[in-house]
Image (cartoon, rainbow, N blue to C red; front, side):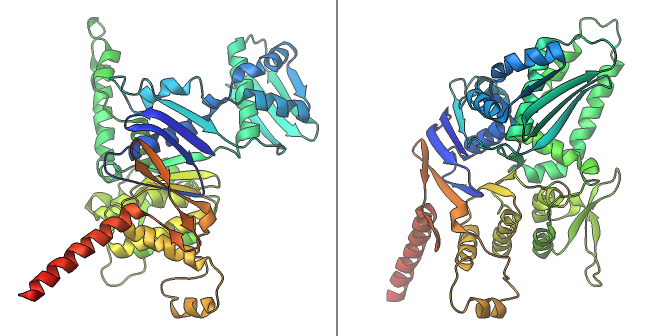
Length: 449
């Protein structure tokens, strides 16, 4: 999948291919967050890149006859003609994506390219409109069938039928092509600390609006809500919603085997998380005699608060074809834990989760390089792993072909080299070499005295 962005803040033009692991590096204030949020928005609103108008004829037939069918060959042609690289609706979404109230992104453009399936998987999808109306779509060896059933007389607006047909076809055909984005923003430390206060503020506002007397006609409740809206971009609002919904999330179970990934988090923190009904998130130790603790999250370390979202996602929500976007995963982590974060990211990749990160951490990248080296076949590998079993095992490997790295630079991005020996990032290496050269020069001059 390729995403092209133009005229987005400092970014004049960039083209990024999403791989299993995509890494974005670069200077401060060079556009990394703009790129990251745009990728999140495009994947969240991927249906903007499917032109539902192409489905008008079959929607009309469905509305008139209650059923419609189309052969697979004709369906593939229909799908091909429905795809638009520059979504008609997405251009207008930049304003809401960044909560842009000054029309800064008015000229921004995003284009999305993806592989079109040459064969469609057999599947079914139902859409219910209340209890009275059901639309059921299915794809089998004969092609696509959509049937509508209703209880009693119904007179649905054609625009609604067109949207439903578009959603059914998109869901059946593209569900395995587009990644489901999950974002963990750089603001996660504050979100984990203040999410309860956000709830309390919201509840106080609702109570206040409910107490407004009906005769106060000069007061517009909607205007009050708008005037109090925070300057949050969509990814941050979605991140807040994710954290606030832990009570519901904890009732779910991941469809993946995340035990190894979760064990890495426990190794990093020496503890784990839990969420009791309507109670604070707790940070606690299990089966530990010395230094045992069970404390609310707001009393936990900053490193724990930075990882809590990832922990709950992995344990309860993770599935194949997710794209987890993490701003600066190294945030508030020691060098040791940055290395473990590299192992955690690799563990996620190896169970089918795609990852997109921005990072300033040379240490994290160097550990990813070690895991790339471990993916090679070489004499003595098993012996080395046995000697270093306290740090690495056969699960700790990263295929370099699954890694893309980009650096923001002069209004765009450069794609950096990745090989079976690792990732080459001159942006990091040059600064490290420079600081060592300065240190060597100063030590030499001091030794002369």
